[in-house]
Length: 250
Image 1: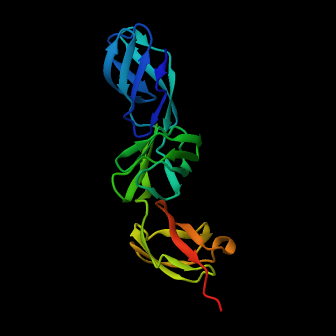
Image 2: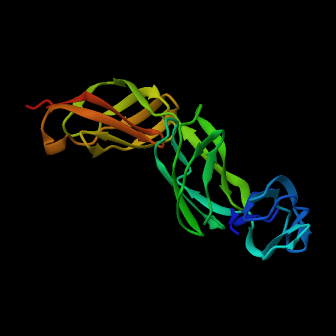
Image 3: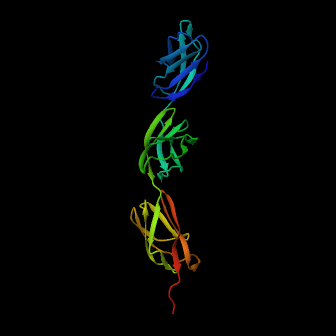
């Protein structure tokens, strides 16, 4: 006489189907000492809503002819989440985050606000999940659903990808040291700025402006180089946006 599923939340409320023979007109189904609510019954099955409980309990079906052999049902507590990493990412989604905690073995879904994704469970204490697209930039609550229930408590922040508008000035000497104002959008979380792949010192003025000091030209040669700005929302690259020129000589 199988039981499916054979595990559920300690809070109860799990829909459980018990299959077997001679089950028509079942009068009661017990989970340990507690009685479950019968929602459907045929000669070969009984569907019930599990009561609350803890641990492993025997499940039996009682009809006018007697009580069945017991089956085991395992109660699972709600998950506990201790951390999520990284805590930000692009609004378009697609990056992978790791969630640590306990009670994650039966995780079936991770919710980012109103969006849902299917996790990959490594063990009871860790899972990874590809972040779904967000509806807008900003923080959303993160919850994990397991056989034991759903638990909230973590936050993930969607960040729009940066854009680069203009560089002023857009040229400077090959030795570097030119102060350049970079304008664009979504620049407040800037993590790095590069000129031709070389990291440049910078400071964030606002969400739409950066002050950058150019590094020496790659290889010390003049020419146009790509400028890239990396934020928690991604990387924007402006091709051949800055031109290195030779300084004056006498």
